[in-house]
Length: 254
Image (cartoon, rainbow, N blue to C red; front, top):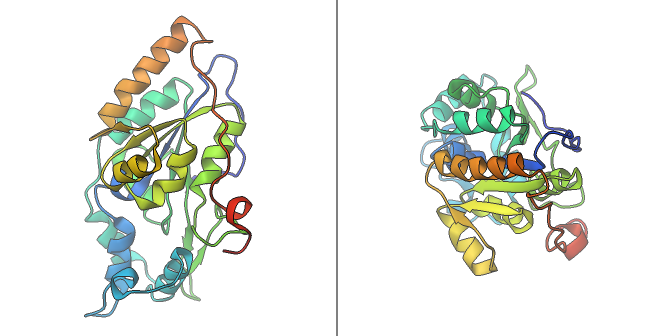
């Protein structure tokens, strides 16, 4: 896996100050791969934790699920591979990277099935910020290298990935579809939303653009790159926003 580090370098002098952060489940993948993998590891007759009314936090649900994973990830990877992918992602990612736009997949999932999926799309080079699941003789082990250690709400802090790119001087466009994208959307400079994320943006008064495939995002990107080519000062910088989530907003160790 190409791991996205906590900090990111600033854009070069000829690179547009843009970053494209993209969710995986329901976005690059057209379904919830994390749920499919969890379901594949459960005994017959069991439902997913939230369907059974679990009151655990999301990271706790993930850790419990990972504890029931087999030592051999093959059946889980097979379950993941059955979820169709949006094949328009690869052309968007390649277009962005060729122009010097930072691209990153950000996922609040187990992580191990994302790189194989990106390789199938021809985009295995894209950095990934997600949970990290290792399969070894001692059994599966899940860690959260991109989590916020002072906050237990999310496994991967998508908010901090947005803020890291903004701190480097980039305007961030975020592409997502649902609840796990709530906080990223709240800090991003541009939001591409579909499905449940549309409702979240409406309820929160967040500006957003609807999308169906990554071709929709690419058309916007082409406009931004054309504007930058005509006048490098044409693109606005990132917009600072007050923190509304995380330990800074609601105290540590939630």
